[in-house]
Length: 435
Ligand code: GDP
Ligand code: GDP
Image (cartoon, rainbow, N blue to C red):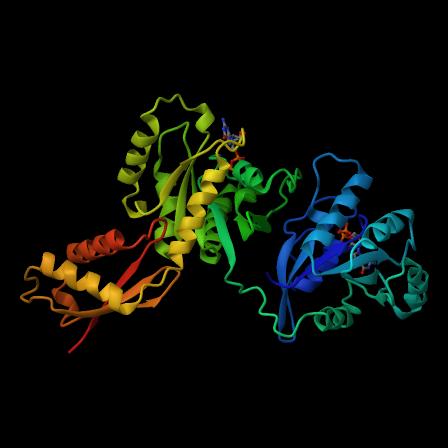
């Protein structure tokens, strides 16, 4: 797990503004109306040679819980999820009762708490930080998120708390999931079902944007990040650009993911666009699970699953490695079946086969079914070795790659798949000339 910093504080102190400062770009929208909107509540930040994750807890809205309950819940998220907490207060309003409510909650944790007194936009305001000593978390730091003042000092203090051997976010143990699919198949609903009802960040304001949102979560002791592209269609009026934009977001989500959840609407027939979206999985060679959603709305008997699975494999020939799950996001049914498939897919996506073992499989396959002459030549395979994972990629050495017919490569892939469990993951076979 990466070193994680959570930003807490009552509304309007500038949490979202600070988050944007820390992660470097203007990712979220701030507005004077409290609690307006946030695009993203989780992102990486870098400082010097270090990388860490930042959570803007202000973006975590808990249903229609009352105000005080909301900030308590947000503080809890910080306590539970973070390694370090930045407690933001507002120099202009001074210390308030709500600040005290939050501080009481933060006393319950041993985690390091740094008080950042925001909106100290000029030196004249510096004295306003002293009253915040009363919070009891040591020296407050004066910052201005809007003007970038004090941010370096804050970052220095954060980094100073990080362990030396901190390997950070390229953490291979975190399974990154992208939820993709045509509009209305139920991506948002599915994302919410997966995350439980904790995180609901939907902007009701017309024309506001919401990018892919990365949300970390844990399930059965495993760590995940869900990359959700669901907000895209809510972007608004300029529909010409929306289509392109949504494709772009879907692609970038897939690119950053390990496993793509290809969501289909079980209550209607497959359409060309479903195939189109799923095709990105192939383009980027990601692991995949096909999720047939709205299963509650399907009239079914004991054969329906099998029939539909066959139909999907028939239509998506390039995705036959992926398992098919049938769920209802709306009724929160069978969601755990997705995780069984995701775990398998991820494990196989990272699978390594020792050279001697895969070699035996290659040689057996060739002697069982020798290649026919093709392009005036006969392929002679020497050996195969796995060169990488994510997905498993094999280099096969052959006298002349042009002698190998496409269908023969297919055959070899099938033989590999018969010998090893590659459920859920594509595998790549690359031919190399060996003299
Ligand atoms: P949040 O609700 O805590 O996330 O607060 P926001 O980041 O949305 O900021 C609330 C308001 O305070 C916005 O109008 C920001 O522009 C403003 N604000 C944030 N940081 C600063 C700052 O450093 N100086 C001043 N003067 N205003 C700020
Ligand atoms: P997205 O555009 O892919 O994010 O889809 P949404 O999650 O916004 O859902 C689109 C519509 O399908 C909404 O009206 C949902 O209520 C409905 N929906 C989503 N999941 C299910 C489900 O499992 N069953 C049924 N019957 N409807 C669903």
